[in-house]
Length: 218
Image 1 (spheres, rainbow, N blue to C red):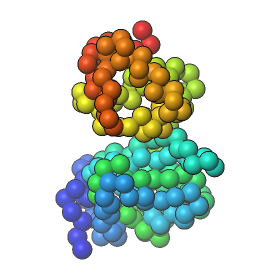
Image 2 (image 1 turned 180 degrees about the vertical axis):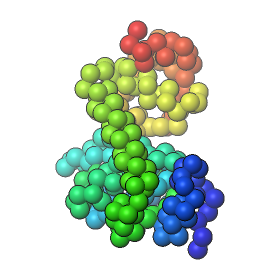
Image 3 (image 1 turned 90 degrees about the horizontal axis):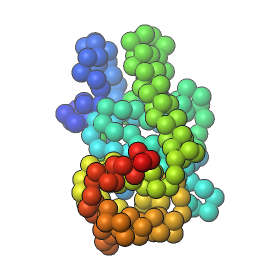
Image 4 (image 1 turned 135 degrees about the vertical axis):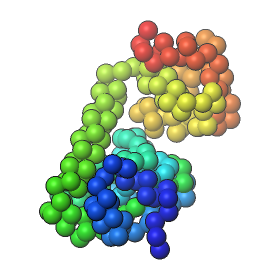
């Protein structure tokens, strides 16, 4: 089965035609509905995943079942943890879940290894993506370590780009990296100040400029 147009978007358009064709020839189409678990802690890595449409979230799962969002993989990006597992031969240490319906490509491990060994262009493509994802993960660690819960919550609400944020308080707690009870208190404070309105499974942004000021720490 040929990759769908959305799956082909997993590869950058400026990739050399011969290399692009070789990747598409070796890769299998990947499709998953929203909510599908793509990998769990302890799973072996089956190949190099490239997302062409949709978004994957990667969470660190604690022993008590609580989750902490590490990063998201959007269209045109590769998964940092998957790349690391392929290079090291280690098992997955986190969970990857389709946050929306996802389409992409799965390049099997043998084909990935061969291309890394033989193609400087492919190595640059993989390592450039790896470096970008490392930078995003470092920014996430910096936010969790040094920014207040209020800032992180405001950033999480604004990141959706819509006035109505379809997320439960438990889901926001995972994203912000704190307990649900803390998110409940901070949302109540934002609502009291007139910045948001709290609904069932959703938060509506009422004053985006003021929320942006909170996100910037002002």
